[in-house]
Image (cartoon, rainbow, N blue to C red; front, side, top):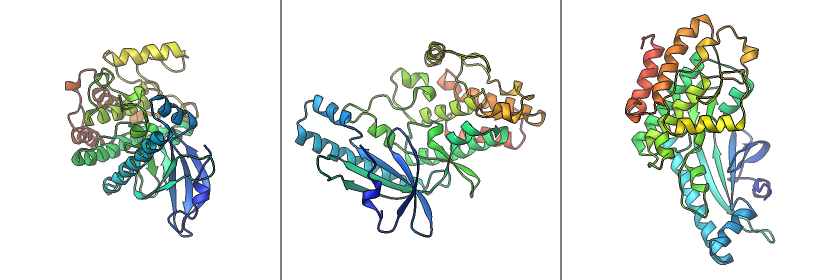
Length: 332
């Protein structure tokens, strides 16, 4: 289904689309302006495609039943989006501004579109892909996202899908932020039970085995992000960069971790002689000054993704305190 954003301009009475910013699994993102300020708008169309509608029909719904089903899905997704407003009072969570639901009513068209307006930020995934990070950058990322998770834990909210795609950076505030709460999880299986949440690359072994997704799963996912950044951007158990690997080797490495194999330290500390150009897109650059800090940060990340849940951090606050101690020069 084509984009719907242009036909509903001006959004919220005054916002016009300036340019297309990108597309994720569940929607397109646009840069908008009201003539004074700029923001980002995510467009989520429900159902996402004719295949999704066909899936609902295959579940035993007639056309009227499918319409009712997806209308309820759209309304529930809008409610979940608005829950972000309270959370975004935390400066380490993407600031939510407004959301609206519109019905798609052109000829032979069926569905709804949700528009979510939020602050415009830089994609962290893009930062990693096209550039390099320093060890202090990764340390700040971990600290900032732990602060976001502390707010989530206080509010009883579980994100369920922490990965680089859902992390952002504010240049003006010089801080990293967590975004996309719950919406992707809710939309992932529109004609099935919600099933197992999260992304396999960042999932803990116990969740993979069927345990309930709790705040502990969010902390593990953050630990995996930090570990990969310190490990040539590779998941555990893959060969060391620059040695190539095959899809079968990646699958084997994934299964090994998900079955609870103990993970060794990341390898960034061995990369001190590489140039920034060599390291572009690989995670972190390390020099002699930051080598020790990289080693200690690697230990923290390694603990966060221990195969034994009892050895991990018991809360986002405890995780952050370990990072704060490293920031303050304490040795582990």
